[in-house]
Length: 251
Image (tube, rainbow, N blue to C red):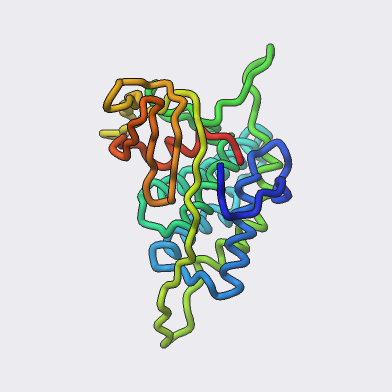
């Protein structure tokens, strides 16, 4: 992948989570906000407020709860962060820098895609599946996920903050360089026509019908294009951002 952003290693969180993109995008967002180079539009602030509500949500107050119940509560909070983030990322209403940040947050919380509550149908995406052992599937690194919360709360609080009364801020969106990466594998396009019902379809090249790539994936955080080895490039694939982004390596 090529990008104008920093590409240093993950200092934002433990190595057990995919936090390299989050480290880069969080630092970039803080720098742009502090310098006044990014004044979030209403859609950015609304999405940030929704994610912030999940980030700062307290755990349920339970009396004499079992350790397993408390563990489930902790994982459910992290899962809700991921699902809210994905909802606003795939809605396509936020600006490119906000989309890049939301995508990085989603990647970091990917281990909670199906934990503790997996999607309710066999066709639902299986992002973030953790390798199992002889004793059963591995659990997500809950403490590592919770360690991300304080810094994220502070960042999203700035993004979601309202302007002083009487001010009429003009949104300012900094340019975000497109990125490109090669991906060998299949992309699946998912639909959810009604609650608990999922559909899935493998994306194919409209010219040659190829499904396995290697694809040349290009994204400007508005649109994603897929380049097939046969030379045809398409944007008419119908994939949501997350259906592409969450399959790619953390770079």
